[in-house]
Length: 351
Image (cartoon, rainbow, N blue to C red; front, side):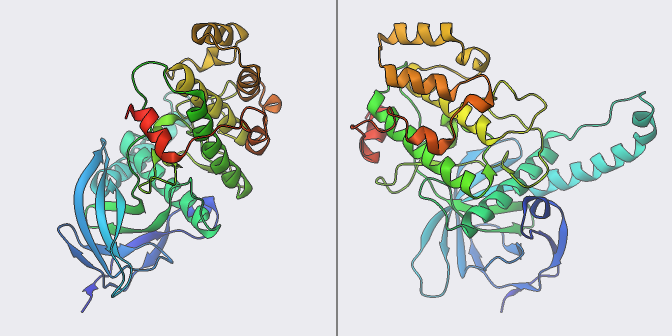
């Protein structure tokens, strides 16, 4: 028999506002068999239960979350699939949410008359909000059929200790060797795959919000190339914007929400990082002519098409930047030489 469960779970109706908003849903029972880890106590609204799940090793960890490798059978007799389980600690999130609500209630009068600023969400609450936002965005991605260069959400559920999303188990990170040594043709291949993923996302109304090389992982299939991950800052175009800044904020961002144009600016920053080894934190100088002049001089690069693309992607005004689809048609992106995913991986990892 299945594990009886009368707990409640936050459900996710269509649309980002509804997906992120708390809607209580009673889950009657959970029949999934789990081994070497916590049992599943509730499934996300509308999600299909898997037949079995075996917890594996931890492959990454943060302050309020961790990622574990898991092996899943979707139904009886099906082959085993390897996925990644992104887990956010329930206890810290729930405790901090309660404390935050109590604090806000206690400070209402003081904040209203200006004696105290309104309390801000702490890290645990923000981590849970990012998890909800990521699940919401990836459900929309899944409903649109998915994309080979966008991480896939298989399902999401709760254990007694964590909120969990099962996603694509990617391979190694898109890490670079020491110094600015990435070949231009390798960078072209990676940037084209990134732009293709952004075209898909823009077509279904999703702004990623945190495009950078650290959010690109190699797919576990060596022939599939790079995969865009981490949708914790994602926005949906028709929903109320939320002011969030990613790793490479565009000049117009500050208290503004990310947009399709700011995603394109971040692609320009990522291209600079691949070709010139430019680190984050220099976004305010990325688009200056003097900065580009120094970069090209340091690489002894005179590629007019590359410079033209960088100037377009990094334009100070969002209205002057191309869309992701337009950038894919730029002469530099249409260059004759591109590399296979395997050769790109070897080049970027020094293999």
